[in-house]
Each structure stands twice: as C-alpha cells, then as structure tokens.
Amino acid sequence: MPNSSFHKQAGALILCILTISVTSPFSSAEVLGSSPIGKLATAGSVSIGGVSAPTGTAVFSGDSVSTQESPVLVTFREGSSVVLAQRAAATFSRAGKKLVVHADKGAMDFNFIPGEDVSIQAGRYQFVVSSRDRANAGELALAADGRVVMSLTSGSFSALDTTSGARLEVSPASVPEPLPQQTLKGSLTKGRNTFTDQTANWTADSLKGRTITVSGETHKIKSNTLMTIIIEGIWKLNTGTYGYSLGAAVAAGAAAGVGLSIAAKVALVAAFVAGASAGIGIWQATKSPR
Image 1 (cartoon, rainbow, N blue to C red):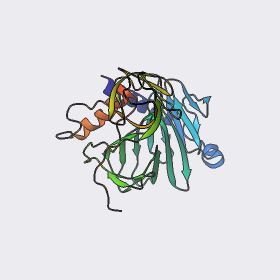
Image 2: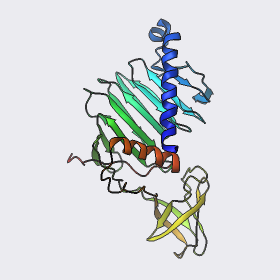
Image 3: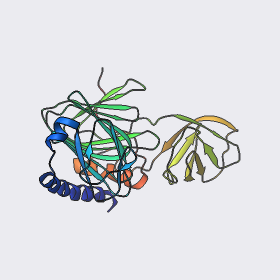
Image 4: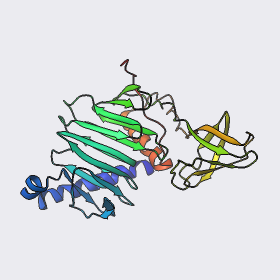
C-alpha cells in the first residue's frame, strides 16, 4: 500500500544504520576536529550540497541533504534521527545545543530523543518542541505550494505561522483540521483553460486531480507544469490577475477526524504525501491565546 511503503523503507534503513554504527562509529577526528553533527545511511542516490553522498557520509552543520528514488536516514550524535522520504530535501544545523531542521521539500519522519532542543522550519511555519521530557516523534510534509502537514505519535510542538503571527499546539491528540489555505496570485484569460502563477515552482502534474478556486469559480485540475495549471473546462471570469487557492481531496472521515487513531492519522499523512505530494495544510489542535 502507498501509505505503508515509506514506513517499510524507514524500517529497513534503521536496520542498516544499526550495522553502520557498529562498523563505522564516529571517529575522534570527526567528533573533535571536523565536528560533524550526524551521519547518513541510504540504499539509493543521496546528495549533500549537490554532491553524491554514500552511506556513512558525515553530515555537518549547514549541510543540505536531498534524496531521489530512495529515502535516507540521518542519525545525530546525540541519538535523534530523521528519515527523508523519496524526492525530499532538508538542511540540518546546530545553533549552540539546538538542532535546527529546515524542511526544503517533501516528507520526513523524525524521532528526537528526550532533552533534544529542536526547531523545524517548514514553509511559513516554525515548530519548536514544547516539552523536552519525552521523545518527540512523528511526520511532517512540505507541499510544493508551501503548505505543511504534521502528525505526532509522541511529544508536542508549538507552531508559529510566521506570516500571520498565529500560534497553535500540535500533539498526538490533535484532531485533523486543515488550516486555511494560502492565497496566492496568478493570471488567467477568459474562455481559456490555463492559470499561471509566475512565482510557482510546481512539480509537473503534482496538482492533477485537485481543484483550483479563483474568485468563487472552481475547476478540477487536469494537469500542470512548473508555473501553469490546466483546468477541466474554461474560465468564465474576465481576463486578469486574481488570488487563488488550491483544494485537495480529503479521505473519508478526515475532515471531521472523528474516531481516527494516532496510527490512522500518521497513515493519512503518508497517504496524502504519496498520493498528491502536496499536502493538505497543517493539522491543528488548539490555538493558543498568545
């Protein structure tokens, strides 16, 4: 099943890294001299800063790791770990004792040990560990259009929308509830079937099957290129520049979140990533009054 593939690959990688930790531990030169912050393990093609990086390669503060067809497991000296899914990228660094993760694209599975001070930047959202007395584990995915989805199996995060200033808490008890979608701008021509956003950077056909709404007019997306969406039908709106939002299919029961177990929510995140690679928004628990 698509929503279990990622977890199977992650499990295989964890076994792989256990072998590596025995046969190739951090050397004293790495720890004291070059100061790597972690190591990676993968069965496929991975790069660091655009350069091919085989299993066992050290990860240094500021390194950007990206995957192609296979995921990669990044383990940190302190014991925390992050698994980047296929076609994902993230930058890792240390700011003092704080581990800083910048999600650049795609999905990741994370497990931060108790006591680990962590900050995750994903799109316009900044996540900070709320409590360090337990492990903080779960999944996060960053859409091509900047939307974010997070689901936790342990721990909690405080999330800040850096655009609006709104704050919220995410925990394993969070009920799946998409935040309002971002409103962007693009142009269309009346009577035609395309919509173009010159600032977009979509993967080809990653929006296929979703919907686009422009000034109250909604159409299903037939296909898309880097900056252009092709709809099913034609625009009735007058030629011009408009704000727009993208819709995504929601699995049965997901909108209300009633009866969903933690495992089901984690699987739901994986399914959205595997099925649309664009996410559906960020899971919201209770907005804090701050």
